[in-house]
Structures are given as C-alpha cells and as structure tokens.
Length: 217
Image: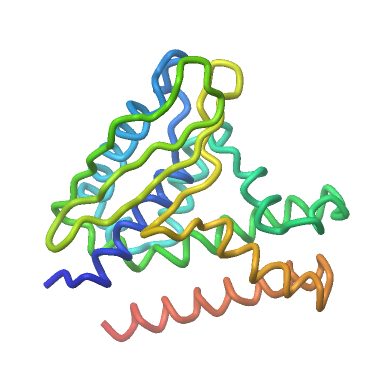
C-alpha cells in the first residue's frame, strides 16, 4: 500500500527525474513553461512505468537515461553553484565539474529507491501566474495518486527562446536551499575539496546501501 511518506518520496523522485532528464530535441522554442512541465512530467511517468529497471531504482540505468537526454535545458550549473554558495566562485573549473557530477549522482541515488512507488500517479499543473515577457517563473504542480496530493513546484529561467529548470520544491522545501545549508558547513570546515570528498563518500555509501537492499530482496 502506498502510504503518505512513500507517495511523497515517489513525487520527489519524479520531480528530480524531470529536473535531470529533460529531453532536448522535443522542446519547442515557443513552448510555455507550464506546458513544458506538464509534457515532461507525463513523459517521465510513462518512461518509469514502462521500464522495469528504472522502476526498480537501477541507478546505472537511471544515469544512462539522464546522461542520454541532454542536460543543456536544465541549468544544473546554476543549481550546483547556488547549493555550494560563495565557495563556488573560488572553486577551479575541475572542482566545479566534480561538484556537479557528485551532486547529480547524489540526487539520483537519493530518489532512485522511491521510483518503485510510481504507479498510477498523475501530474496536475496549476494556472501559471506570470506576465508576458517574464524571464523567471514559478510553475506549480500537484502529483496525484493515492492519498493527499503532493506539492511539487519548479523554478525556471528563460535563456534565449528556451526555458530551463534551476530549482524545485517538494512540499514547501526547495532542494537548493536544503543542500546549501549542508554544503556550507562542509565548505567552512573542510573547503571545496572536503565537500567533494564528502559527496563522493556519501554516494559510495548510498550505492552500498542500495546494493545491500537489492541483495536482501
């Protein structure tokens, strides 16, 4: 039975997969941001339902999906920079790349186990509160299934003719804000390299935990 916690986790997993796997080729230059989120959410839900490996939380398969569906339409660099905070500007290009790679893997691993909870969910996009010419908008959605709907909102910026996602909110908690607090503590204590090492260690621990969980099934 899908309880409130697992439903919330599956909604977060869906939101993160939308964030990380927006397919470039199918984005119309004039597509409205709310229409884009509705389409992408539907496509991701359909992909999860039809791929047993992704539904089972296969991280390698999810990463292939994420990397194959080009990420230029998600401003992940901005996301990572905002999460790292002031230390980002002091990081070398190599450090910035490592931070982006480890942060992406952290998000995928954090939510991958919840994908098994994705069954009959649907996404309702709320009316867009924006003016023509706005370059930064909030798209509000609800993930509906068993139990109460889960609020999932997206922040998007317009880059040329393309809308790019740079933050998301699950049940009132903005993901970048959450990680910024954690990352700031690491940077203050250990510097940028220390944060990279901590993220890498957390990803390895998460991988070991998922492997042990799979072996126990």
